[in-house]
Amino acid sequence: MIKLQKATQKGLHGELLVPGDKSISHRALMFGAIAEGKTEIKNFLTSADVLHTMGVFKSLGVDIDYNDERVLVNGRGLGHFNQPNQALDMGNSGTSTRLLMGLLSRQPFDLAIFGDASLSKRPLNRVSEPLKQMGAKFELSQDNYLPGVIQANNTLHGITYQMPVASAQVKSAILLAGMQAEGETTVIETIKSRDHTERMLQQFGGHIQIDGNQITVTQQERLLGQQVLVPSDISSAAFFIVAALITPHSEITLKNVGVNPTRIGVLTLLERMGAIIEIHQHDTIGEPIADITVRSQDLQGINITAADIPSAVDELPILALAATQASGDTVISGAEELRVKETDRIATVVTELKKLGANIEETSDGMIIHGGTPLQTKVSATVNSHGDHRIGMMLAVAGLITAGDVTLQDELAMAVSYPEFLSDLKQVIS
Ligand code: S3P
Image 1 (tube, rainbow, N blue to C red):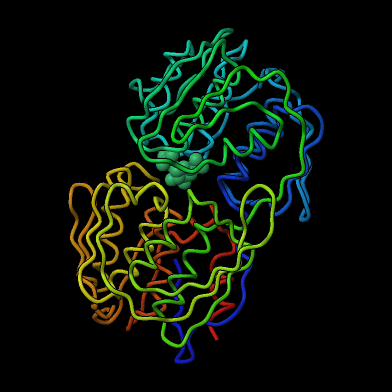
Image 2: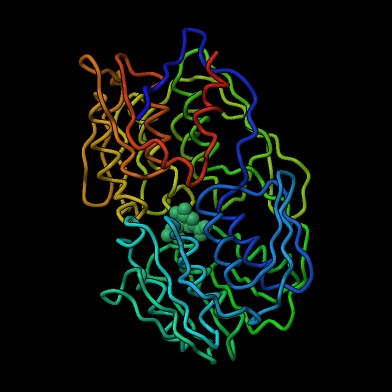
């Protein structure tokens, strides 16, 4: 439990390099492990979620060495893992669980998997169903949840799969299995989700065909170890972008942020709310990177609909906070996916922001935020992350502009994606 800090009259100032991208760090470990030769990963995110993926590969016999500068993965090639002598611990990480269910769906031995209480409530049939159609075998609690077993299986075959929900985790699981399957595997998306798996497969020398929202992979013969530079995580940068926008007299620059077009929904939506955001893109090969500068500004409420959700799915809690400070209403709809994140983020955002005086209503597939309400507590308030890293960080940003004392419970949840968040926040409070 901690008392949240307030911004001063001078606002927030400074330059920050937020940690490496979580999605890309997971994938860099996975591709490094199944490639031949060494993969060197720089700006790797050493947060709890990614360390769980690393732990899994170590249990499977992959030699991984890491220090502050870089991670070195000694790849074993596809299908050359050792049988672990313990169950694989996924911690709080949905990405580890879902992607690894695809990647490990063709192994000659059973793999027991488990996670923490929150992960054990998140649905897995969205991945197990298409993977079973490919020939994979799973035994899951109530057919849908952890703990479970990825059962021994020697053959997979390609399928064509029209995605029923926009989910990069599901898409990636199918592609990672498709890389080991007979025939072609095609995934068709209605709305494009983050494409880090597709990009990384290409970087590691794999074959993939991308035709609009249709992605096809075949069995990969050989992937080769690479140098991977992980951009800073836009999902982490988003907390500082909104903090600077809503805290008077602020100016913050975020360095080397990943601006992959499938991830920048938060920037597009804030621009629709009237924000002017300076984006200076670097010359890079692979994932695009930019420096982003924001100053405090007036915002207006907008409508956020289903088509906007996939590219901003993790940023909706912090966007909801921005909307409390905008003029007019913001209506978020088509966002039912938020209910199956680390917490039910529709419920947790609404419950916690209400404690700080926000005028916000829950709907079945989103929320309605009546903006222009100053945040304040009667005397003091205690808010709770509910064990959800992004709810914890959003509340710490809300605390900056809330009149009255705010205490945050379960702040340690932030370590899932951004262990140094509170000290970085302190750094920009002048
Ligand atoms: C992720 C995909 C998203 C996102 C999660 C990371 C990934 O989940 O919310 O934080 O790395 O593929 P869904 O695929 O369930 O939308």
